[in-house]
Image 1 (cartoon, rainbow, N blue to C red):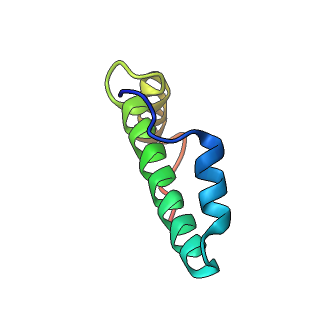
Image 2: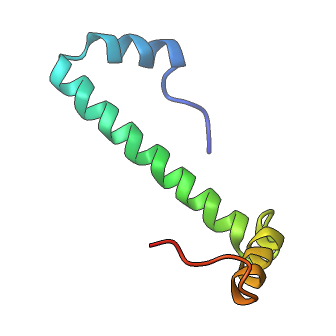
Length: 72
């Protein structure tokens, strides 16, 4: 990715100096980024060959055999 333009300390100081309204916007943006990262990890984990693929197949098998039912 390359070298960082700013140090973590500089970024933190910049965030502290923002007006509250801008901090709130930044916080929402960071939460959106975090959610996207989580979604990507989940997709990778449960795709074929992923860490959760075996678990997903077990759940599907249990569902189809009647060991569990659909949540409403």
